[in-house]
Length: 147
Image: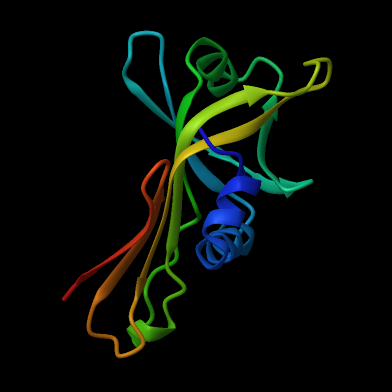
């Protein structure tokens, strides 16, 4: 697993674009695992604090219980419908990995995200191809294009 700071060091341009996508809107979407292993999708806020990617929730929230039981997650930035000019679409960001609870749990749950993957999806400058830029732990940055 890598901290957000480590991702920033290894893939600075990608990390900056992903941070921008997470900051563009207040609410993002997180996938957690229920006790029976089925997925749960919940709204969540994301922030960068002291170089770490962080999330939080109210005490006792079902997503909090999910993460305490199984720390695996997938997190997606807020989605924005593509405009008529596809090159103006800001794209979407996704990260996945495991959480580590950092707060004392007295007022709220707070987690630091440790990452195995970071993905940015966007349209190229010509509006002709979908560009998927990804960082995976142990592999580094890779870019794929789909026309």
